[in-house]
Image (tube, rainbow, N blue to C red; front, side):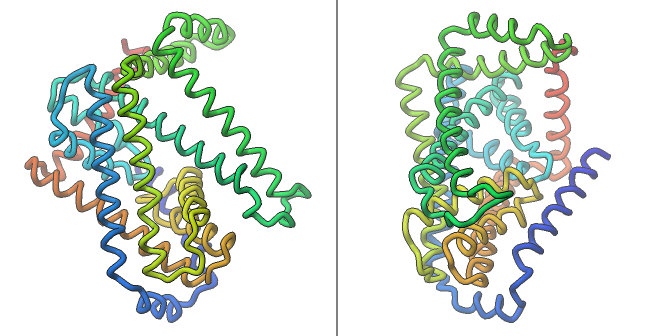
Length: 353
């Protein structure tokens, strides 16, 4: 029932976001815009999407190293299958990924999950740095006359960008302190958590303990440098994916500012509007970035969003299914693995320890 409810909510959000995206565009206009696409540029977009998963695999291999040295070729299957599961509203793919790699290579579920938590924190840090660049350094790309409740939207975004600076510094400081001063950090958290109920305190300590497990890799300078390198390279590919499509649609503005704005707006929309396979929320982010802010034709922005979404979806589903069949898994066994991953997660809850 819980999964069905999540699915229904996700579908409802997707329908609303698609309505917002398509409300001013006729089907005839949309079909005509598709006919003008230079499809040759879709191929490098697919190639860059594939490369983003390659760099993710190398980064995850390094994060898993404290638990076991795993050849990168054995990382792709749990990575792609997990990301395929991540398109669902519950975003359970991360737990599935931890379960699959742990089961295959003899790593505890808690250990594998801790590496994914650290991986996501590095992604968050880079994304926040992109926010700083867009909302602080290039905030003048937003209309200074636009207001919300009497407050300048440009000023609000600039304030948010400055908050992102503090968040980046805070996250980095917390990660390094947890890696080198774990006991001190836990004692500080314990002091602040004293007023909370016992159940909440236990959950907080449990989460911090899992995070600390993954942060141990930071104490290895060479490994840390490689993690940063592959994190930056991953986000370079994630940003560059859309650049060939700028030529496929012959957009007026092919600048770096437009490309980074598009990446940021898509990330914001798929985060605040979680939908199955990011359908609708992804498209709305593209429309806001390219049409509302950069002034591209609305029908072009809409068709661009559909093609860009399809590129990511095809690679994700194709890659996931390829490894499902390569590892001789059926859809039934995949569903069972997801259920077992959720059971492992429940087993990790502090009250069950």
